[in-house]
Image (cartoon, rainbow, N blue to C red; front, side):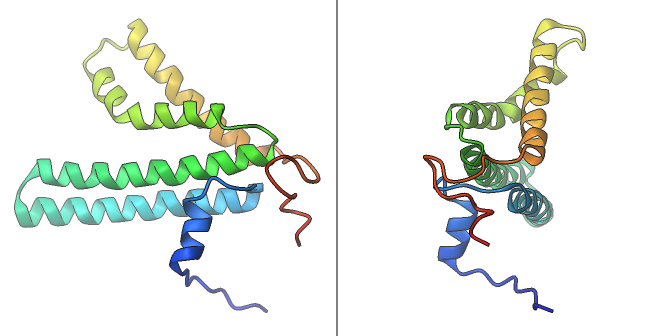
Length: 158
């Protein structure tokens, strides 16, 4: 049985989580996505708690959480781009995802100040639903077989 090795060097980390080049099939997409979400959530909670309890400043704690969230959005964006590449699609859909993901904190702040049945609140909820459905579809749809303009089929490399 092969030993599980979690050690990543900087180059490997950059290639796996911060690169928009190449293709990514479903299993690594799901594993890296869940890993990024779990790790960023834990780090955000730790930093938020430390900054809030040590400095007593909610603004500094919020700032730290925002920085971590931005890094998480960038990581997820690169995963989405490479997953779309596996499906033979370009970056426009990923850029739309990126814009919505970056604006989500502002959307949530906006939505709390609006009546639940207002048109604006429904648009915000629709945009959030779009990003969730995109991620679910990327988890479920099999990539194009064989090489495409974005690289070789990751499943054929095995």
